Each structure stands twice: as structure tokens, then as C-alpha cells.
Image (tube, rainbow, N blue to C red; front, side, top):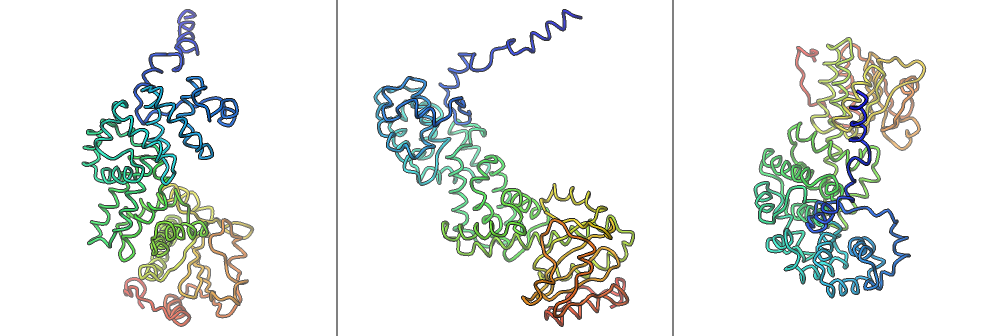
Length: 468
């Protein structure tokens, strides 16, 4: 047994197998291959120390290792733009294929739209493309890769449809994992700009969803960094088709979860979303950006109300009572009368909400403090000029008029924590009402909402539900 343990220790020890840099053939193969998907080795020496140690203005005096690093990384540092002409002249003079391939890989991996450095680098790579070998020769015959303006757009055109993408990969001698880096980020961005510019309302829900699924599938294939680099345009393109109609719930939830994860909940980060809309309008020329992004806000409102009722239905001991309330409030929701919604949960429903948050990305508050029962939860809604607090038990629903003179009386939306007793006892202000769920409460609620906001009740009035 001792002998077996000794052998095992030797096999699993740090010196049993050499680390990758010690395997010289592998390191050489990595340099020679030059495929885009390989991560470049991270140098232990910080960049600023490297630049102080060497003279980037005199590439001919650099050691081979330092020259390789300069050729790979200078493109991330526009402050050294003046060094680039001499660097490229020196690389051309020594005509090292491995160095040229390193420059081609830097162009693909570190590419940034509108940066003059990449115009120069693209022209250099084009002049050396016969020496670059695979996959660069195949790429340059398939798309104008070395044109910093046309190249990303042409690649984007090849990526959207899965069958076109597979054919392109085969022609360019690439693998799916090679589709990463700055050039691919720019290609996805160019595709989204093209779609945003010509996007019309789809002929049907199914057509809109098929197109959206194609974009989502492509984004998933290209990876997280590409989605992150283009999240704002992606939001616009995914939401634009749904200004005038609604997608299926499953598709809507998928898009909503993606955007909430990448860009945050607009209810708690409204300034970020306002800035996003302003940038899309100013930089991309998408004048309807604010209107398009409001689609997500409406989706969140609808999901919030329905999720609240789902959660409480699973914790209440009066499902019959909850069925009535759900039918009543969802009538306003289905007619797009609910402008904002936020819920805060008692302890009984909080665990279920965490599960919902993990799948939908929706945020919520919690109800606590002395006098707050674990079963008490509250839904806040804005309907016209009214703010409504609907509780999960038999407490009164409370109605405030959303006016400037009432601001000190109004409950705050989007808070992380509410003192239950305080929220239940809030009153005052012009037009305030607290109406109990007794008798034909639904008629009292509907009459008060109609009187205050001129929004009529347009929901079902079945005798089997409540005998209107």
C-alpha cells in the first residue's frame, strides 16, 4: 500500500508532468498555428513596467520576446499610436511569418471599431496575407477581413442564419470557438445595426419570434463577451418588434431574463436605462429608442403582477379569495392600465420568490418589522393617477392619488425593505381611500378607480366568480 501511495503522489505532484510552457513543441505549435481562439499568454510583467524597460519607439533594438509582446499588445494602448509605423516597418523588414501571424491574431482579437490603429494594422496584414497561411488566407478570400469598415459588416452578414454560418466556417477553415474577439464583437454589432435600421413590425408573432430566436442563438454561440459588448443594440433589436403586439410568454421571459441580467432592472436603475436610450438615439440614430425600451418596462410590470399572484396562491389558505382578486387586477393589467408594479414579500413567500428571481431576474422587496406577520405580502401598482397597495390577507387595499401635494404620503416603489406596520397604516393626502375586501368590494374598487382616473373596469364579470 505504501508503494502505491508513493507512486500516486509522484503522478499527482507538480513535477510529475511539465507545465505547458515547458513543453516546447506545444508552445511552438501554438505560435505557429495562429488560430484566433487561443488565449495569448499573460505576461507576468505589468504593461507599464514593460514599456518603461523597453523603448517601443525603437523596435529594431528589442529582444525577440519583447518584440513579440509589443506586436501583440500595443493595440490596446492608443497613447503609443506614434510607435506603430516604425513597428510595422520593422516587422515588414524582418519578414518573420510567426510575427506576422501574431499581428493578424492581434487584429482579430483586439479589434475596435473606429480606432485608426486598426486601419494601419489591417493594411499591413493585407500586404502580408500571402505569407499568413491558414486560416487567414481562407478568411481574406471569403470576406474583406483587412478592411476595418467593411470587414465586420460582411462577417455579420454571414453569421445570422445557422446554415450560412456553418458554410462560412467551413470555407474559412474556422471552428465555432474561433468566433470570438474584438473583430467578432464588431461583426455582431454591425449585424445588429443593420437589423435595427431596417427592422419593421413583423408580419406575425411567430415570424418575430423566429427572427429573435435566431439572434439569441447567434449571441449564445459567440459568447458572453460579444453579448456584453453589444448589449444596448441587442436590447433594441429584441424589443422593437413588440411595440404593437406581445410575444409568447416563454419567449418574452427568455428575452427579459437576458436583458435584466446584462443591463439591470430599469425599475431600480432607471438612470442607466435613460442613458442607454439617449446613446442609442444620439450615436446610432435610433430616435424611437426610448419608446422601444419601454416595452421591457411593460413586460416587467406584467410579469411582476402575475408572479405576485402566483406566489401568494401557493402560500394562501384562501385560494377562492385569491382567485377573485387575481381576476380583478389582471383585468387592468391585460388592458395595459397598470403602468408600474413592485411587490414586497413576507417570510412565507420569500423562498419561492428567490426561485423565481433566479429564473426571471426580477427584483423584489421584503416586508418585516414588528407587527408584520410572515404571511403578509404587498403588491404596489400605479394605475393612472392612483397608487394602489393590495395586501395578501384581509387587510384593506389602500389608494393614494399620485400628486405632488401628496408626495410625503405616498409609498415608495422599488424599495428593498418595508416596515409592514408602517406601510399598512400609511394614510392621508388628497383623495386617499382605504377599502376593505367585504361585500361587493370589486364594485367599490372599480368605481373608485373609474372616478379618480376615468379608467373603466373592462374585465370579466361572471356570476360564478363574484356575481357582479
